[in-house]
Length: 145
Ligand code: DQA
Picture 1 (cartoon, rainbow, N blue to C red):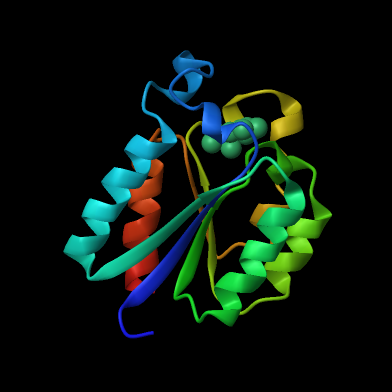
Picture 2 (picture 1 turned 90 degrees about the vertical axis):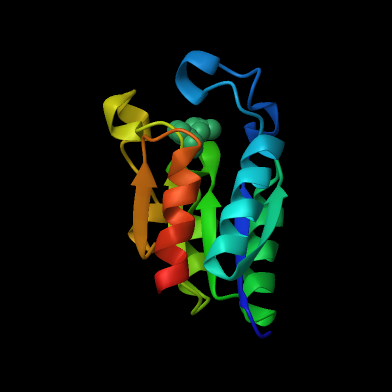
């Protein structure tokens, strides 16, 4: 792989962005965010691979795939699996590609159950609370790794 290829993995309910609790998550769809990322990636000399699944195992498989395909980094918004999934924690620990945890909202200002992040225990870093811009900031961070 010649240019820096960055996987952008999205977990449950993020396919509903734009309609889902817009007061918290904004009005942009995941497709809108994907288009913004593709454009910014071009400027940064990267390529992005955007995926979404409501199924935990798909995210585990895609983390392994990112490693096997030589991805430069992974941006991971695991949605609610962030707060529940030891399998995702183990998958991040099982790969060497750096994983950046991303959230549209800031989970620490929300319900107590969102304060625990299993993903964050293995992530290189976390960007949260900036809406769609969290993804762009994470991409910039990933590009400079
Ligand atoms: C989220 C925050 C999570 O707590 C929540 O379960 C989501 C979205 C975010 O991007 O702000 O689904 O990951």
